[in-house]
Length: 238
Picture 1 (cartoon, rainbow, N blue to C red):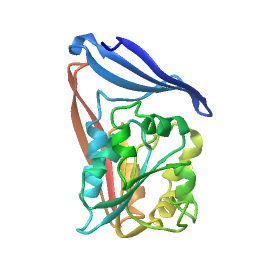
Picture 2: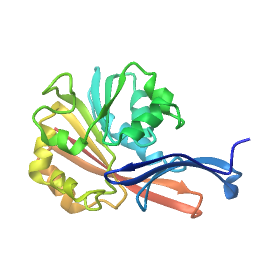
Picture 3: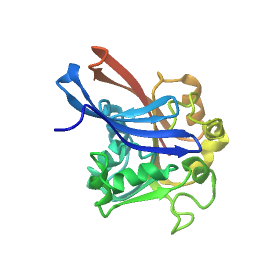
Picture 4: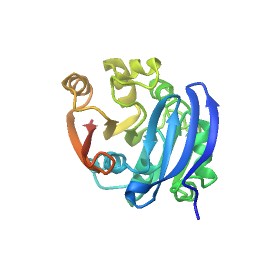
């Protein structure tokens, strides 16, 4: 029998204390839920992952047929990466995360999708700061500098204005987005998760770099609030 509440891992990081925990929710029939907390903020929960899946499906849905090389920024509980791998056209997937313990959770099978990702030969974890790599000329692949990709899917900050760290701010600028776009192949796609409603200002920034830009509001059932909640997925194509 599983415990009603269990802290699976605790690590100190430059961004604050990182906690992985598992608990049962009595109001949902003792449903088992995995949660990640960083400092005082709740980063993610396995109870809500519809938008993370939509991020992969909406972003990859804009690509032409063929074989795709994809980058996911932010590993978390692995839902975006796992959804990307459901697409047979994905031939390689780099998942970039700045927190070594998060990668370790997956490699050790501490989270439900961990071994699914770790054991897929198309998937490789990269320990690094996504935002620094996005602004560099070398790019995301430490083995092949300058390599470009068909899609980059990003789920790290809460929104373009609600950041986990102030240094991420330069990424959400015209220059930052241009540097990101330099790592995409012609016809490539950038997709971003946001917990806020669509922002006209950010759509305008995207339009200054990409030829096709849209935002999709994704609604999902929130059993804790007994109502629907919503997040946004931005999709921008070259």
